[in-house]
Image 1 (cartoon, rainbow, N blue to C red):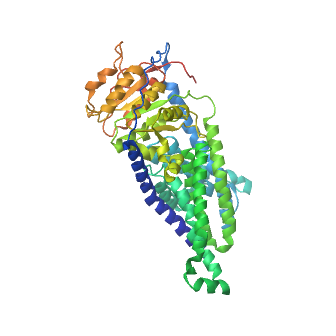
Image 2 (cartoon, rainbow, N blue to C red):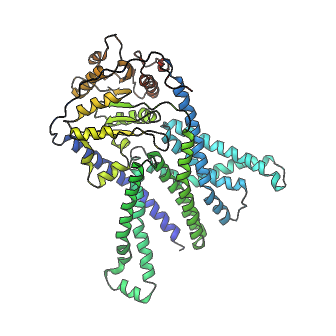
Image 3 (tube, rainbow, N blue to C red):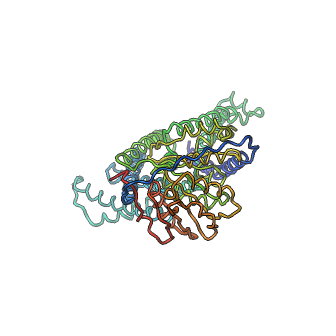
Length: 554
């Protein structure tokens, strides 16, 4: 048992490293499967439905700023909700840490460990609110300084209850917390960043969950072999031939089945909306954080600490999921803007450009309504979910493609338009072949409240985009469409979207590395979703000046 801590640390580190190797491979194979399905034999072409009359423009309009103010208030509520959930879930391991370290069980000491673990609020909040790296770094610094200051205040407030007067030397607790957080969080931070990188975030939690369970086979097998060799009969049997690896052989199959069951359980839970992709990622990070702390305690305290550490850690992990779900539901409770569907169209081929569009605009829209899009390999890293992963692992990805009118009708009838437990809406992908994408995209255009079309790189050779532009002109009002353009956009064909009254869609210039352009595009989309005509916007025009109807008020 003295070596158990080292074995567990080695196992966990190996699993994370394998996740870093396998997750990109899984994404590559999934991307190839999607591309192969798109390029496969098309079959009969699905008929394109005739256009219906676009909705009439709203008679009255108000400022769109209430939506943005609601978003800012929501982000604050989400931050404190996640922080509270993590702080409460950390109490069991924090109390055990003090007990094993012979430290006083006072609120200030209990706060030290719990607040350090509560720093998980930073990456979780960054995922929920689609924050940039710059904003995330600022949030991390602010969180550490704020928690350190709260620790100083708490230590001073508890002094009178201990029969002592507060003193200025307690201000040194500020530095003590920062030092403790640095020692506690550096390894979980590295492993968490690796498992939660945007490139692998869609599949890393699923891969990690499977490997974490299946990777127990060598560890349990070694322990079983050690136990067998502890007896005379067992030692003779193990050492008499190829049975040296008997322990691993015995446990490999049941552990493998357990890993597959765990993957299926996660996929079913996600499909049933028991948790969201962000909640799954948060639970993965929390598991890493608690597990590393438990391994440290077992390594330093020896065999006697193994059982209580395991119990406290499992209790903390079991508490975090429900507490996080409850906190998020309370944070998003109350009046909110009505759900509005966003259709994302784009020029296929540039993965980095499409992923940036998804990270900075589409992920943010998920607080305002569901998203629909035509699937393609350029964004699979951002849109793959546990259900997609399981279908791919089972070799059933072909079932997700629209090939017949019945397929299209079924997919449209089962569009996911309800919010997840965390309050965000999901992305509805439609995998199509050459024979079905046109019929599919016109149906999505008909159902969209707002359309964003990324036309960077658009030229005369992009016949698919030309078809989509023509259908937008016939099926949506110009005020419902926002076009993202740059110097590479051929703008001669955009005149087809001009309405009979001379209105045009919003044009948002997207300079290279222009962070504020995505904010402008998002504001313009809020206006477009409300149905008001949006004037042509240049890069330095404030999009918040547009008008929206009185659909929702604060």
